[in-house]
Amino acid sequence: MRQLLPNLLVDVDPLAVYPYDARPTPPDRPWVMLNMVASVDGAIAIDGLSGGLGGPGDTQTFRAIRASCDWILVAAGTARAERYRVPRPAPDVTEVRVATGRSRAARLAVVTASVELDPSLPMFAVQEPDDELPLIITGATPPQDRVARLAGMAEFVHLDAERPSPRMVIKELHSRGASVVLAEGGPTWNGQLAEAGLIDELCLTISPHLVGGTSPGIIGHSPVSHVSGLTLERVLEHGSALFVRYVRV
Ligand SMILES: NC(=O)c1ccc[n+]([C@@H]2O[C@H](COP(=O)([O-])OP(=O)(O)OC[C@H]3O[C@@H](n4cnc5c(N)ncnc54)[C@H](OP(=O)(O)O)[C@@H]3O)[C@@H](O)[C@H]2O)c1
Image 1 (tube, rainbow, N blue to C red):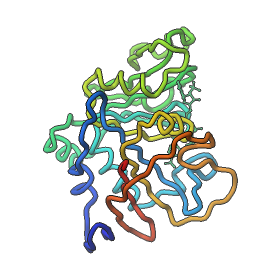
Image 2 (image 1 turned 135 degrees about the vertical axis):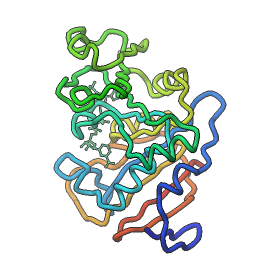
Image 3 (image 1 turned 90 degrees about the horizontal axis):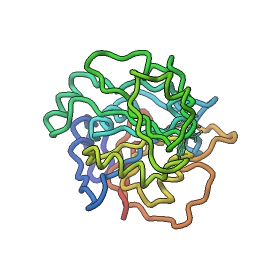
Image 4 (image 1 turned 180 degrees about the vertical axis):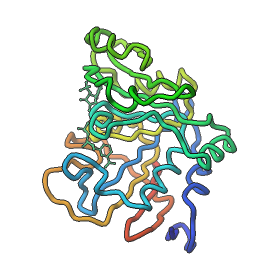
């Protein structure tokens, strides 16, 4: 992988870069990073999945970005579509995590109002003894039968709202010791994070494809009332894909 900015480097390992970036913790909450892949024309999915936009470079940056956080936060639509698993990093990623003062694996949190989460999803059905249970962040009174069917496979936290706001969710993770939270989508949830002014860092893969169609962009379809500026910190390139890292101005 080549680095194009801030300076030209011919061979860069993302795992030797992303986990060492500065992420100053804001005074009252964790740093929030968002990682997404989009086609050159801004689509985030092909036939409802992001996989067709990825490639070998995306796989490398994805695991390096996951090595940089304490919690992975995903909304239920993405957890269902992408069939999320409990994060279980490869040994070289764990080594970097531990060397940078993090736990051996990031923990997964899923935000949902409906708790329409099938127990056959890999994050519930494929668990090993050392795995931490997924944390399901939901409202005060979700359907009890759906909560009950995940007993022993997930930990639940009930926030005091029908649909917890991004601030409530991030505050909950802060209370659980998070200093860096990695949001992995999807666009509906990202739009709420952006509207709440909670995106400190955007890691974006620009996939060398033209997709067209009606896919939402990375922040979904809802307008964000205050548009915040971003500073370009780094650009990597591999196989015509670009891996850009922006931080909030
Ligand atoms: N290209 C990429 O990098 C990338 C990354 C991620 C996802 N994706 C794609 O994006 C698509 C999914 O995105 P999406 O926008 O449809 O859905 P999403 O944002 O992943 O999830 C929406 C769901 O999250 C829950 N939710 C959202 N806001 C909530 C709140 N305030 N409180 C409680 N629950 C809340 C609700 O779940 P309940 O319905 O359970 O209540 C809602 O239906 C998939 O096609 C996926 O492949 C692409």
